[in-house]
Amino acid sequence: MPQNFIMLLSTWGVLALVVLILAAYRSQLGRQEDDQIHMTDIDAGAVSHQVAVASKIDTVEKWGKLLTVALVVYGLILGGYYFYSLWAAQQHGVMMQ
Image (cartoon, rainbow, N blue to C red):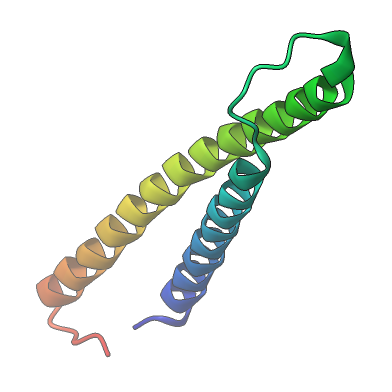
């Protein structure tokens, strides 16, 4: 494999790791989420906590979706680059290692 491809593959791995960390963090936030709706003044603290957790979850989900799409697109580009490199090497009679 060419040295630059290994570097590109490493950056894809780091991006995949970031997506996995975001998924784990989203799961952790989901455990803090309260499934009940609090509507009285007595539950004002619970309401503000619900709003804060929901806001964090929305932000993490937005970034998670965006980075997942970037991960898939980047992976497809890397796959295309790899197969193109193999094809080009075969056309020129050079074996890649």
